[in-house]
Image (cartoon, rainbow, N blue to C red):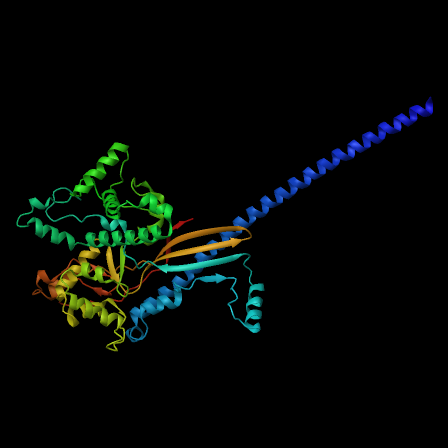
Amino acid sequence: MTSKHLRDDRGIALLMVTSAIAILSFLLIDFTYNSQLNKIKVDRSRDMVQARLNAESGIKLALANLTIYQEGRNLLEKNDNVKGVVTPEKVERFLLSPFQPFVLPIPIPTGANAIQKNAIGDFSKNTLLPGSVLLEIRPISGFINPNALRLLKVPGDDKKGAQTDPDDRAGISDSDADKTAKKSPQFYVEKTLVEALEEKMREKREEDEEFNNLYANVDPIMLVKELKFFVNPKGAIDEPEIIDIEGRYDAKGIIPKHAPLTSLEELYLLDGWDDAIIDLIKDELTVHEAGYIALNEITNDQLKILFPDITPIQVEEFFKYRDGDQELEMEPNRFKSIEEFKDVIVKKLGIIDDKGYDNRIKEFEGAGLKVGVAGKLFKVICSGKSGDSEVKLTAFIDLPVLPPPPAKKEDKKEKDPQVNPDDQDAGDFDPDAGVDTTTKKDEKKVPVELLKPRVIEVTR
């Protein structure tokens, strides 16, 4: 009996040991799985932080490039000899390379020989940056600023920001008022924005059938009218379409801003603008500074809106001068400065006289539209990668212009009492022209000085 019990006990012990091993094995597998899962989480978190740091380092690199650009522009303004050789546009293209992104590590180009591959490989090994950086610096040379749709106060208005009824203006007929409206900077921006929306939506419809089915009947003109209603004070616009838009907002209980946009994200508050439409046009807009009209990129329609009385022959001659003509063997003459542009418009083509040109430019500046040959507001897009993580940051960087010293009008009147008050201006300063327009009789050249670049917004 004793030996039998011992054999039974050995069987139970074996079963218990086997069960213990199975339980421990399960616990070990579970522990290993949790350890690996936690390691993956830590690695991903580390990669995300590193990708963010890489993207931020790209923005710092952009600031360094723009600081060099600032110094170059200031040197050009102060040294007329250098200005005649190197244009601001060339400085911009050389330092910022808007069409050639900065990439790190350096990609090996197709067709590279062994020496080039080894050189790039050695450089990459010595680079302390883990991961990669893709940086683009784009000058904002477009002039589509939604805030420029805001109407200027009409002289004689009692209500601040309100638009005077055309019928109440003495001596101005409906047709005259319509012609005046079509010459306004707001019409310029409105037309440009409609054209941009039409082009973007047309391209998207051709390549995306679902988008075409959803938005085939969407009218870009009405979208821009709604945006105009959104950024203007209540009751400022006297147009039939605005009544319908306002009624739709009231019916849905949506309160429009009736003020300038402070961020492009506010576009998503527009009732008629779906996300898909905003995403199409978003990269073409800016709300951070006055719109910028790049003279070397201005189009036919834009030139006509800028100078409404220009003739077709003058338009043709303008673009022959700027872009050249192969048939006539004319070389292109890219504008080096706003003064050169003015000389072509006023003297060479006779589109408008000197005073009319100055008034027209000031009218557009009053609406937030400036002309020039190189931008001072830049959009920086930086993508940082580490492992499987990627962070994309978009920053807007501004180079402020140092304001000119205030003019001493009293001293000028004492020295020259014969100065005609009509020849004096309000002291506006044109940063692109570099001219102090305090007096037209004694026009004085003042170099433009750009201040250090500053980041005014960063979005992810």
